[in-house]
Image 1 (tube, one colour):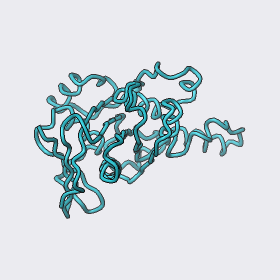
Image 2 (cartoon, rainbow, N blue to C red):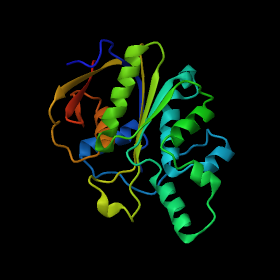
Image 3 (cartoon, rainbow, N blue to C red):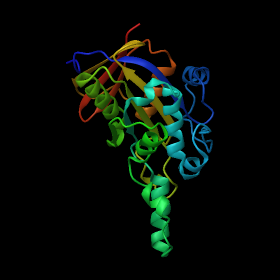
Length: 247
């Protein structure tokens, strides 16, 4: 079946990972089938006020930098948004739990920014955006769930763009033994709307997608980087969601 009647348009996209900050770098990475990108690098968020920058975790920096790259201060700042991450602010959460275990005084800032919609709220403040925002976590299928949510919103109202930001950060060493997929530091942002760009189609069928050990966010980044000539299929709770970009 086809997900809805309106074919959203892919207006803009941006991917970031350590050492992969431009479309050319991503294309070279995808062509060489290089290892999963991980590292300590952090994207610049110089566009934010210094007070806000000091509060950001690395994951929030990744998400806000990716979002900024596709909205870039223009009218699209007043878009709806979907922020998605499987684990969310795990690094900050672990630090808060450690402080509790030691009996230390908790930082109110750290505590308030451990929630799953941290980046969603910070984006709303930074962009003075009062449009609806959704935060999603759906296990290994988080990326597919975020895209489906965005498509659903555009079916209801294609006149207002939807920003989709998906990011994952490698688990802390304490939790690394429990990882069930390769760990990655990666953020992807897409701006979808009713006009401009190329038509992005989503179809859903019963069954599992083709095997791919990479996390979904990395599959999506590789697909975008290769100028997607072929469809991308992601799993979502027993369904196979296939993305096709029309020329």
